[in-house]
Amino acid sequence: MTTLLIATRNAHKVGEIQAILGAPFRCLTLKEFPDAPAVVEDADTFAGNATKKAVELAKWLACSECGKRNVESGNIFVLADDSGLEVDALNGTPGVHSARFAALDKLENSRDADNNAKLLRLLKDVPLEKRAGRFRCVIALATVSSPSAQQLFDGACEGWIQFAASGHGGFGYDPLFVPDGFTQSFAELGEDVKNKLSHRAKALAKLKVYFSRLPT
Ligand code: IMP
Image (cartoon, rainbow, N blue to C red; front, side):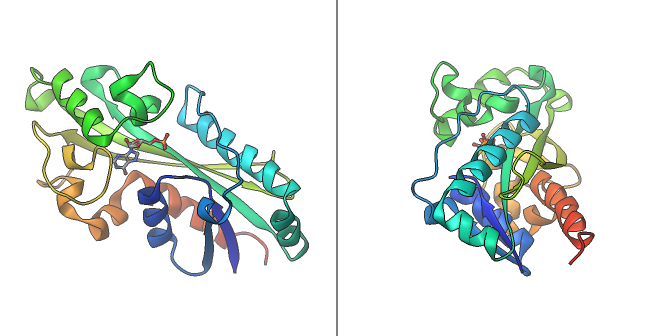
């Protein structure tokens, strides 16, 4: 059994990661580690932010009682997801700033509804054929025993941005994003479909291959 600490406070991301990974992973979340430090996501790439989150939490865990216990009994991995939406007509933005797109001058995340409203406003005059974009995800994996030796796994999901939100599933920009090959948004398609083709699903598929090749 592999133990992973999923290093995000985004409950939707945790749910998707747990659903996609399934057995044989034992997933811990930051709810079980209320003293874990908040990591400032100030890198300018998804890989930079994911790495920072995974390494800082693995280092913190190595010094905590729980981390030490886990290291003695085997190992614990820290998994950090950094992800976002890139829109071609906006030169790849919101990108790494997806979570706080509506108020870029603030450090805290904006509400999904405000981010979506800003995106629709900026794309108001952009025709259908120029509304292409993609979700991108980079997952960093660090170990408590050797925090600096991290691995990266990436995934992207191509699609386009609708003219209005539709659907109630998922989170973030899901009500606006229609993946290529479909006519409904991620929020309408639901979690079973999304978790098979999303950026996160593709990155996690690579992570599963990595674990399957580790010596037991
Ligand atoms: P992070 O927590 O800094 O990685 O921010 C990710 C942000 O990107 C989220 O707050 C969402 O706005 C957006 N995002 C990432 N993945 C998804 C997804 O699967 N669906 C919709 N929005 C997403």
